[in-house]
Length: 313
Image (cartoon, rainbow, N blue to C red; front, side, top):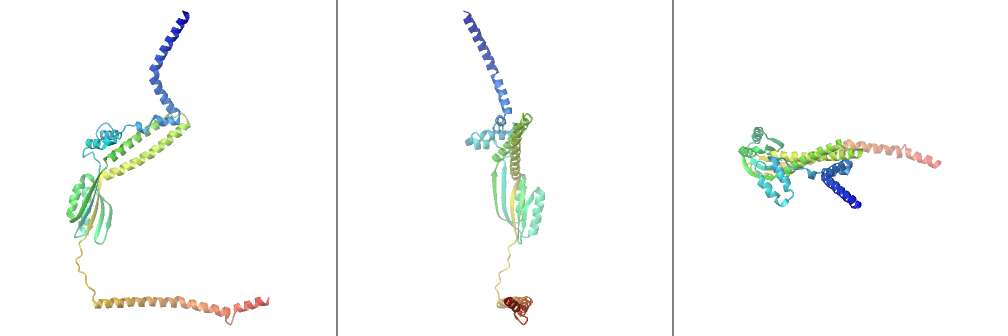
């Protein structure tokens, strides 16, 4: 009977202890996860990854970015959902036009282009001036792009014009969200760095921070370049001068004779240059050669005398 009582007490104690451990399990697991993360370099990377960072913001264009981020998990519905959520003002469009205009006066047309650039807050990225044509690569604020094109048509007679529009909304918001994600991840690793327990952890976290900073710089550069293309549309403008109306004239006999004598005169002048070159350079060289022959083999015969001395020895 005593044995049964003892077993009952032990069983009751084990049940009570097991329930208390079960209640404490979630808190212990969370604490264990954090300590494990800070306890080893590998755990630092498992504790926080880019996939755990939420994309987007709570309102405005941020809600659109958040929706785009969620659509990544279902590519088949992404385009339809994104198109439905975006308005014309939220779309990121890259516009480009190629325009060719004929003008009567290139200088006056160039002055008109300069005035238009000042009026619309635009600028010329490159300019090429030719004999009867000028070429410009113009960057115009996208909000005033259509008005600028309309004003530009008054400079002369339009020869041809083509326009392209590229929708880069998804690419733009994706870069923006990735940049914010990497910045958040960087802040988290910087907080880990302050809690690192040893040199190994410090070096590992610092290496990851350096990688993140490079990725942030690269992504930020891509986003700025894309934003510049969105904010400023490009217009490739060609200004062509008036067509020359001077008729082509046939060459007369007298002109042909003049050309013939002109060619013969050119031949004579070339021949004279050759003769003068021979007199200036050839005669001194010939005299020098004759002098050497006279010294070595002539009356003096230096080489002959040297040969005789060698034979006598």
